Figure 1 (cartoon, one colour):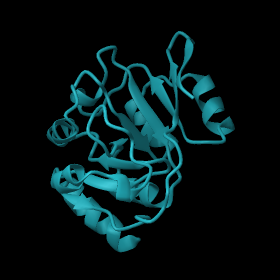
Figure 2 (cartoon, rainbow, N blue to C red):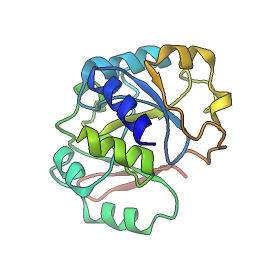
Figure 3 (cartoon, rainbow, N blue to C red):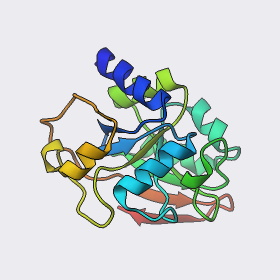
Figure 4 (cartoon, helix red, strand yellow):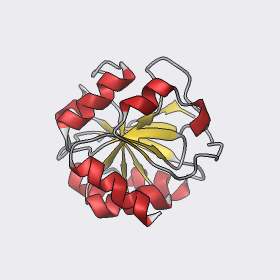
Length: 186
């Protein structure tokens, strides 16, 4: 795993995009602070930049670097969630502008999955995570389901968990600074 972390980090550091296993489905990712790398993902996925992507983080410190105000209920949801849960929070900062939604919100998921966690530990930055498919096509449940177009379009494919069947995509909950809660995807 350490070799894969080093390889992925070197690609990301140079502004590249990677295909990698997450705590849910296979993802396409890059440095969430690099607007050019984020743009490469939008282009590969053939996705409009108005459809924001989520960002993975590995610590409270990283979350507070991106969100000045995190509602208390966010921490309660994170602590009580039994499955991976993405929170959409208001007023994102310190990440690429083209990853922040028009309403200034950003989807974020705290992960403990070893590869992602250790990669971000090395990057010291959040990691973009979007499903490994062309926009509008089904989300691949395993590496073998990922289209050749996606595989050929990334700068590096992580050689871990390629035989694993992944679970479902994460639950998505939108939390606003004025305490509104909306479940987007169960």
